[in-house]
Length: 209
Image (tube, rainbow, N blue to C red):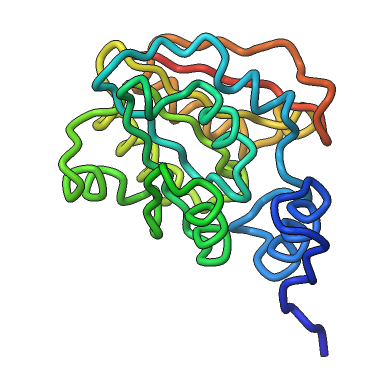
């Protein structure tokens, strides 16, 4: 019998601790976590660099996990700049970790497929930026389509959606399917150079309406 309990964490908030926690969640739910290790700070930096944000804007993060991209966003001093943040996390353990680690930021426990409803219930109309750490390539087609539809509805006309795909997975059918879904609704598309200091290396994909 396989024991799928989360592995013990060496130290809360440490890089090693986050990696061990991430491996534990991957082993117990590989389709929802989608990666063996959390994103590196180098990939997180590429995901948030040069975001055009101003007071009153909303940033939404899909699937924050243990928070590497959340940390990169927090370094942008969102709270003091009057910028709202909402992280949507499906995993209860990750959600609890994020809420403890980033007490000044808001997190919702639920599915990003419900992003329209979630923002409406919280009094938000649109997001200026959406940052996604979701494993889109491993999501069922119906969920992919629901997330793309919801993302288009809540993203401001001059907003930007960013996600990433691993270099080795980029040409695979599921990854191509997601990009085709996005291309039907979003006209602007930019792919970054490979972020080699991530395991595995990844591209950052940026979409605009």
